[in-house]
Amino acid sequence: MQKTLDAKLADIRQNSRSDAFIIAYAADSDMARGLLTLDERSRSIQAYCEELTTIVEQGKIDILLTSVANMDILARGERLFDHSPVTPAIRANDTTDIWKVRGATYADHPSKPFATTTIEEAQYGTLNPAPDQQPDVDLGLYSVTFNNDLEADCYSLECFKDFRTEATRKGFRYFLEVFNPNVADCGIEPAQIPHYVNDHIARMLAGIPRASRPEFLKIAYNGPETMEALVSYDSSVVVGILGGEASTTYDAYRLISEAKKHGARLTLFGRRIKGSEDPLSFLEVLRQVADGHVGPEEGVRQYRSLLDDKGIAAARSLDDDMILHSPGLIGS
Image (cartoon, rainbow, N blue to C red):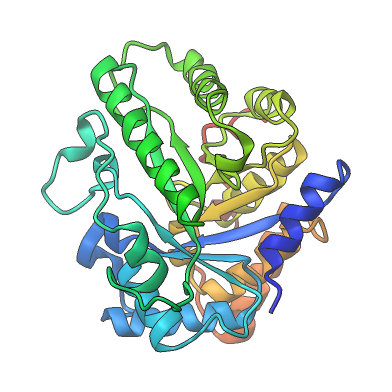
């Protein structure tokens, strides 16, 4: 079955006026938070995967990103994607800045580009695939965080070079996540950080031929100016935004609306979806907002109406649910 991701990427690249927008669900938090991935809706990984199955079957997302272990259940055990328009993807490296286990302080130090999995295990679920075995997964997220630290940043780039070289040789597609610095005192003025990230992205892509480039980028939304600058710099590069921490419904819907207005063509939300009162209802309206059928304000009302229809209590009052929190939106 044709995947909506492939169709939308082709349209975005071929049509400068394309209105296509890609939604990815980042359900890979077990690689960052361990047991904290689970909640009252899913008290085991098996139950968590059942919830993900329901979301894939709903058909509002284009990509489901999980850990390699959970994708083993979904793509191989359940054959969930064989007849689905949703593309499976895995986290190809679990950098130390996402290690958010209880009691840890790893995220306070410059990110190191550690990877638990291998490309073969991501593709086939084994280090020893049969000679004629076809990959079940051919897309992964690779993450890089720059901190203005020569040794750490150089090592991150060396590991990225090794990964993309191997990925290209093995026919494994990837998309590239570039975080803002995770170290608070990185020697860069806060107002310069968006430009620092943009310059690093352009600089690193300058050394990569198009055959080895990522399918798309995923970055923090740092405001309209720097989003437009990155999007217009190279029209062949598809730029998307990351969701960040769970927030209000309006903040999530407005984030997509504003980012799209300024050139983003993709979002990867994780905790904003998982932390909602009802992920299916949240995604139903998120798709409407992303496709431009409703505005973010109306989207909040529609979402809360769906909650009412299902008898689910909203976690916030309407006024509290209309507050903006994302730094890139404040003042917009």
